[in-house]
Image 1 (cartoon, helix red, strand yellow):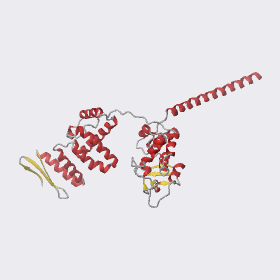
Image 2: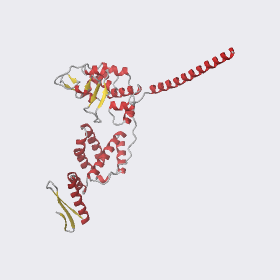
Image 3: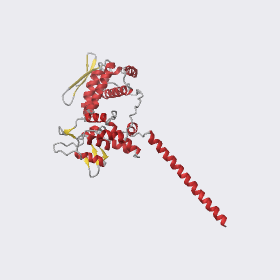
Image 4: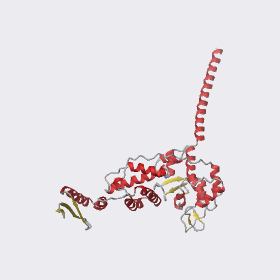
Length: 369
């Protein structure tokens, strides 16, 4: 065990604590000694399993490691463990698009120039800037993971500038429009959509809501399941939200607040009743996620602080709240400015009138004397 010379090369030979054998040749004794020192240090500090895995991946980097091959490793060893199913499946879709253009490239051959070409071809194929940016961001993270695993030395696209995304504004819906759709939703699933409108929660959060999460005494609901940000959050319950929770009879065999009466279990997605209702109400563009945005806009226009809105919506950043949800209507902003102007002028008029009365009183007193 240790370092020995063999046919013009130097072998580093060492047994791991679990009995597995490590042997690799190097062009000189210095490199072989460095590897032996690193192995022994990892055994002493207890990180030898992680170090051995990095060495295993580095063995692959001695030959070509294509994007197609390593993307499969990334999905299996990283994404499926750390991401939700919906998130890692979206990454698979992005890699399918990336591999159509970059699959034959070694990871070390990926460069900003090749990404510019990739973006150009995707745009010519009709892809939006948002779609291209999502794929680039996922590729950037894959390369960072490759650096962590020791496959490459640095991330070549770490500072690649993303395409500019144009924000498409969703239409604003009035209370009457929202109510008109909810009123024609099928009676057995109407409480679900009333609850979403009154709490601003996501559809999946409402579908997975269980009775223990509802605190009627304190008028709060705690969202702890299927949270996008994976953080607990408390949201106040209005009277209408509480009525929606109690609208359906509680089942002993079903822990969910909102359930399908036929299956006596939670709804899978409850999309068809909503789509039918919005067509019947002749507002086909109103989506369930618009209920959440409508909730946020109402809070913002009523004077709620942006950080408070961020907390009840469960956003990781207040910038997301400001950008996509709590936006003021042009009419609201204009009327708010008008009230400020009219209020300022009223104060000025009052001051002038008070001053005028004081001057007149002073003149009256002087005339008497």
